[in-house]
Image 1 (cartoon, chains in turn green, purple):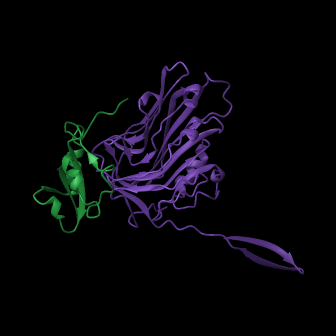
Image 2 (cartoon, rainbow over the protein chains, first blue to last red; image 1 turned 30 degrees about the horizontal axis):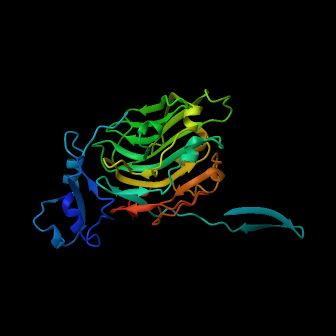
Image 3 (cartoon, rainbow over the protein chains, first blue to last red; image 1 turned 180 degrees about the vertical axis):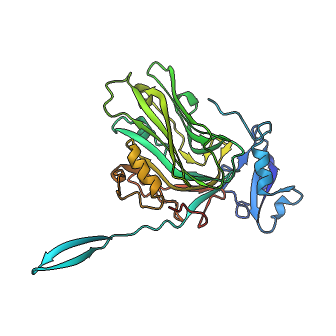
Length: 77
Length: 268
């Protein structure tokens, strides 16, 4: 079971990328104003994510695809 | 395996010619949140078609949902007017857009769309061709075709009509890699990819029919009406590795939790 959490970008530096399913700080998914980031893990929740709300895949997909939300920008066409 | 009939010592016999048989075992799976496949090449030379007769971008793709705009191939320059290449599914349609600039820096684009083709949890073959063979000069318009094949019925639909001046296409430029399943930081695809290819010629409709009818063939070998193996520049079989089996040799990179699966590979 893979789980997603949203963290503040200021917390990205404290992420142990060996314990999450994110390659690096360069590839982590960020919101439009670069204040939040999404990290994913499998199994036990890493301690540096304690207290963070957990989301399932369908829940996080709903968040990032919300056209009125902070993770979506209109396509330049 | 090819069987050859020959005559020896007056007695007919069969001789088997050994040939590697390809088995498609895996596909790439992305979560639509942050996963993507980086081809590690911007593909500028292929898209410009300055020394080739055209291009074809094609892949098998299986959507996990149709809730948003999801990018299949994506690359963009900054500013985007000088180089933008996008093939994507919206919630219902398949679309293609390419942007580039004339020598005068005037902006040109080609935009194509096929409505009502997006469907979740089934395979699609999608492709775009550009054919510059026989064009007379810089102002000639490059014909482009957007293809969609329903992986269940095999029905192929196309659209064309929008073009781009050859000079603009020749000027296409971006310093960013072509990504599979991602465009910028916003548009990710939730689903699977298989047999992801880039050719340096415009495949014909009959060649594409052959690909669609044979999703698990080795596209590095010609078969039926397909004669594109020698033009296959980038070929990501997605068979549990990121190897580029085309002549371009640009192995890809899995980012975040992009991985391979044995589930639901294309079945002919």
